[in-house]
Amino acid sequence: MSEPLAGKTVVLGITGSIAAYKGAEVARRVMDLGADVHVTLTRAGAEFITPLTLRTLTGNPVTVSMFDAPDEWQVKHVSLAERAAAVVVAPASADAIAKLALGLADEFVYALVLATRAPLVVAPAMNDKMFAHQATQEHLQQLRARGARIVEPETGRLASGAVGRGRLAEPETIAAAVAEVVAPGDLEGVRVLVTAGPTRERLDPVRFLSNRSSGKMGYALAEAAARRGAEVTVVSGPTAIPAPARCEVKRVETASEMRREVLRRFPKCDVLIAAAAVADYAPATVEDSKLKRGEKSLTVKLHPTKDILADCGGRKKEGQFLVGFAAETEDLLARAREKLAAKKLDVVIANDVSRAGVGFESERNAGYALLAGGEEIELPEMEKPAFAERILEVVVAGLQGKRRRRRKR
Ligand code: CTP
Image (cartoon, rainbow, N blue to C red; front, side, top):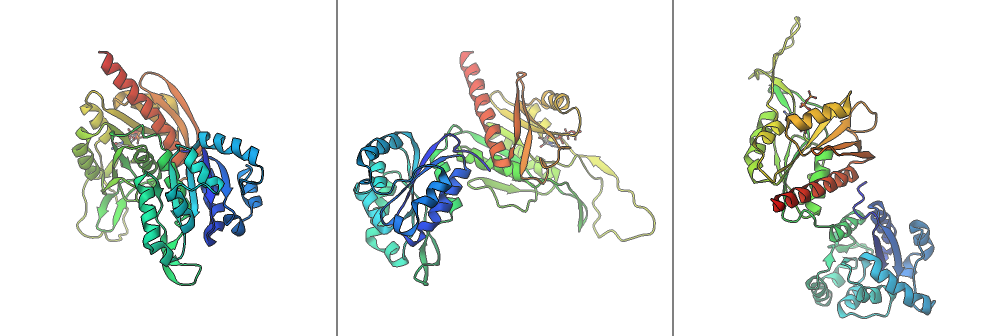
């Protein structure tokens, strides 16, 4: 699991909607992104879900009424308002949305929203008629105009039994919106090109040579870069996973198609991250018709493919930043350093693919980031999205260093 919210405090306000029970799942998802979550319930919210559930889940005290302990509340709402990286109101009832729009402060969460300068995320949940009502829509419009992020409700079966628009968005979607509003934006204006997935090298109309790459690492990198504000294009081999959010995706099949699409785009990118597992060999000839079964053994001649990353390294302009991967089974660091130099990279991510549970086809990864300047950063085993964040931190620092050096000259 990615931890874009590590070290951040997020305040979650749960208001009086039948979807309040899903607030626990929202808390869980935001915590999964690394945040320290403080929950506050409105009095109506507390009718639907108990503070005990949320206190146990988050490990933090839960505020319900601001009149319980007024002195404590005063201190707490100010300190939380200062500490919060984001405030998320989920579910937000029609009443909650109206109060937020009007700036009322009769509950802890509304007072906190007024007292903080942290970004606000609002996830409405209510009956479809209430959601569609002009009053609710106008209030949402006011909140949007003030910069709040509205996580639109979905269409589905509502508490009334009717089907309509008003069902709380998925907790995962709400958590992602929180991560987005908090994201550092440190790749704003940067054009990132990512290669991802395997390639398929055709043998005949129905057969191909390929490898075990799932595309998860490349997609996680692309998505994390987009979240940080980059303009991202992914040149992707065939994968079975959902396309990365907010990225342009160009699908290709073979190494030579990938090369063509990457080289076309390379001159206009600032950062190239080559996460694809490109076939090193392709059949010398592709049969027009399906190979028939025979009694004799079959020899297939393979020709080497061109190294896309090395070609980009050769064409690298000043200011462009290249990240490659080195999947190795032995002499990990030495071989990765050789690739760093040979392909003129700025960073190589060295993976020990002989290790069980990491790398190909896995949810997790582990390795080292080796920098052209000689630095070596260990990347301990973690989920691929979190691994992607760590790589991007290295990229951001490297890009900044490059720019500083250019300015000095
Ligand atoms: N790569 C590429 N084009 C290729 C082969 C590899 O762009 N035709 C990129 C990969 O995306 C990766 C890096 O080069 O970022 C290293 O790939 P890897 O397969 O580990 O190294 P190779 O150079 O192919 O060396 P070897 O297979 O001999 O270890």
